[in-house]
Amino acid sequence: MKLERYKIFNALFILSVTSIILILIVTQPHKTSVKLYALYIAVIIYLVWALIYHKIDKSLTYLIFLEYLLTAGLILTLLMGTLIP
Image 1 (cartoon, helix red, strand yellow):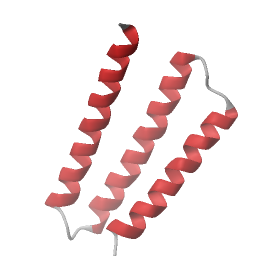
Image 2 (image 1 turned 90 degrees about the horizontal axis):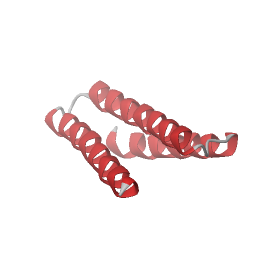
Image 3 (image 1 turned 30 degrees about the horizontal axis):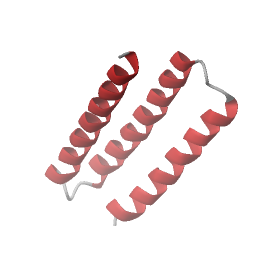
């Protein structure tokens, strides 16, 4: 039961963050700074959420943190290339 609660909570959290960022990007299509701030905030939330999750799970290691950091950097680079002309 505890695992299902975490899955629902994680899904709702990711859905809400994604929705807020998409709304910001769609409502301000010509403002590059809003897009950049939204991407930076999303990456920071992703990294903090990963740290909290693995700290609670007691599985946080240097390699896991490095993997999340590199994934966040790759996502940031790809989205900056597609969203910001």
